[in-house]
Length: 370
Ligand code: C5P
Image (cartoon, rainbow, N blue to C red; front, side, top):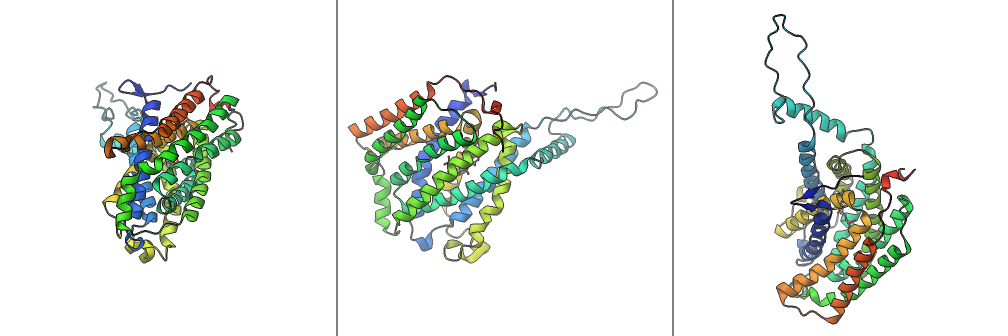
C-alpha cells in the first residue's frame, strides 16, 4: 500500500480535501462575479483564462517535478592515475551544481516525453472543454444555482468510476451518494439568499443578461466531462508508475493546443481580435479567477492521487456549507433550519460513505487500463 505523506503532522489527504472545499467556494463566487459584473463587451476572454490556467499550472508542476528528480549517481572517472592519487571528483553531490542540474533536466525531459505520455491527451482535451464550459455556465447562472447543479458531477463520477475503474460501491455507499444529492438540494433552497452580496453588486451594475437554458446545458456537459476526465486521470495515475507532477506537466502540455482553439475561433466575443486582443479587459478579477483555478487544479491532482474522485465530490459538496458559513460570518446572514438540516445531511452522507471497509487498491484491478 502507498504511504500517505503528511504535512505538519496532518495527512496530506485531509489537508488537500479541506483546501479543495475552500477553493471551490471561492472559485464559484469570484468566477461568477468576474464574468457578470461588467457588460459582455467589456468582459475578459474565457479562452485566455483557460490557457493561462494551463500555462501557470504546467509551470508550477514542472518546477515541483524538477525539485523531486533524484540526482543521478556520479560516474567514476574514466581512468585511475598510475600513482594512485585521486583527482578531485566532479561535484555531483550538490543537487544544484551545473552538471547535476543538466542531468536532472535531461531526466525530467525523458520522463515528460515518455512513450506513455499520450495517455494524458484524453483527460487534457476533456478538461479544456470542461474549463471553457464552466465559464459559459458561470456567466449564465446565479452562483448558487451553478454551484448546486455542478454537484451532479458526483453522480457522473461515481458512474464512470464503476464503469472504467471497476470500482465496487456497497449499497450503503450508493445510498450515501443519493443522500448527498438530497442534502445539497436542501442547502441550496437556502443558498439563494447566501450570495445576496454578490447578487446586489451584480444587479447594481445591471450589465449582464443571463441565459439559464444555455447555463444548464453547459453545466450538464461539464458534469459529464468532469466525471470522465477525473476518472481517466485517476486510472492513469494509479495504473502506471509516473510521478504525479510529471503527469500534471503532461496534462498541461496536451491542454495547450486545445486551449488555443476557442481563442483562435472566437470571432464574436472578447477574443475577436485574435492573439493581439488576448489580454483585453483581463483585470484583477480575471487574474484572481485564474489564480484560484490554478490552485484548484494542483490540489485536485493531489486529491485524486491520495484519495479518489468520489471522495473529491464530497469535499466539494462541503464547499456549499463553507460558502454559507462564510456568508454568515462576513455578511451577517442568519442560519436557518433548512440550512442546518441540509448541511447535516451532507455531513452524514460524507461520514456514511467513509464507513466502508477499505477497498482493494485500484492498481490491482485487472484490465482497468485501456
Ligand atoms: O470540477 P472538477 O473537479 O472536475 O474540476 C477539476 C479541475 O481540476 C479542472 O479545472 C481541471 O483542469 C483541473 N485538474 C488539473 N490537474 C489535474 C486534474 C484536474 O488541473 N491533474
